[in-house]
Each structure stands twice: as C-alpha cells, then as structure tokens.
Length: 231
Image 1 (tube, one colour):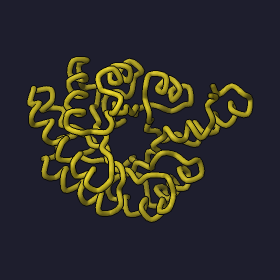
Image 2 (cartoon, one colour; image 1 turned 60 degrees about the vertical axis):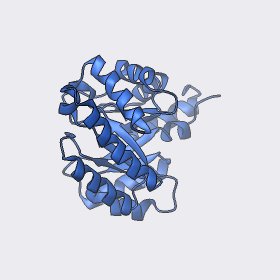
Image 3 (cartoon, rainbow, N blue to C red; image 1 turned 180 degrees about the vertical axis):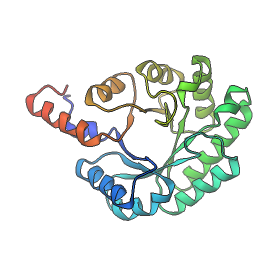
C-alpha cells in the first residue's frame, strides 16, 4: 500500500525542547502538530500544561522528557518529575537512562529505575520511551540498554536526546530494532531534518522520529505524494 502524508505524520513526535523557546513558540508547535496530525508534541516538562490545554480532544499525544538531557538525576527526582507530568496530562514520557551507571555495569540499578518510571507511566495509561544516548555507548552497551529497557517494561527504545555529541544513525536504529522484540518499538531522534532521513529510519525499523523540522518534512511529503513519488 502506498505511503501517504498521514503515514509520515503519524511517525513524528514534534519536538519543542530548545531551552530558549517561549510560551508562544510552544503554542505554535502545538498548532503545527494539530495541522498535520503528528503522533505527539514532545516538550519540556514546564510546558506540559500548555500541551494538555491545546491538544485536548485531539489524537496528538502530550509528551515530555524525564531526566533530560543527561539522565543523571537521582531516581527519586526522575520519578517525581514523571508523576507530576502524568498528573498534568502527559501521555508519553521520554526518559534518559543513567548513562554513566550503564557504562559502569550497574545494570540492576539502571533496570530498576526504568521499571519504576515504566510502572508509573502504565498506571496512568501512558507509555515510556527510554533514551539511550547512543553516541556515548559501544554497540555492546546499546544492546544491553535495549535488553534492560525491554525487561523493565519500556514501550520504546530511543536513540538520542539531540543534545549529545552526535544524534541518530541508521546503523543504530537497525541494531536497536534487532535487540528488542516486536512488542517494543524504536524511535530515532537527533539530527533528523528531512523526509529522506525519516523514510530511511522507517525502513530501518523505526516507528517514530523526533523532529523539529516537521513543517519542512511534511511539505516534502505532500509534494511527493502529489507527484506519486512518496513511496
């Protein structure tokens, strides 16, 4: 079946995470997401009430980040941050795992933290995406992070925050897709700025892409669809 612009939009988490964004910028981001019907708007924790207000009654989910961008918050702080976001209407959480503890081999601690946040999300009817920040990990560590995330109940594994030393690669998406079962989805983020990269991520097994260039990507999707070349 031929791809449609709606198919592309349903893969996009419209990202509004830059530190300098104002309330007007966040509202504009919600308007973009509603126009195209993206999967979610992923905003800073302080912006969750704005998203909950603007996206109410739509199919666009309210999403925020937890322990962002370094993953080094105390577990109790991450849990409190998640619980507040959920109470304010958040439907999807993108949490950065504790990168240093993963690299040190503290797998039980890393897994337990993911489990706590996953349980909180699921109790509220929400989902959890675990950000690995792949640029700092070896391939072996990426695989381990995927296994820990799935075992702990995560719904997605995600490549990057967009604020590390590098972002998403197609190779990482393929590795992550091969490292989790079909019940866990894969999200690419960090440096995804055009339609071709979204399509490549989709081909590699990604179900979602975190992007801020939603308008550019969707304009290209609509153009190609009209020409019969979208795919």
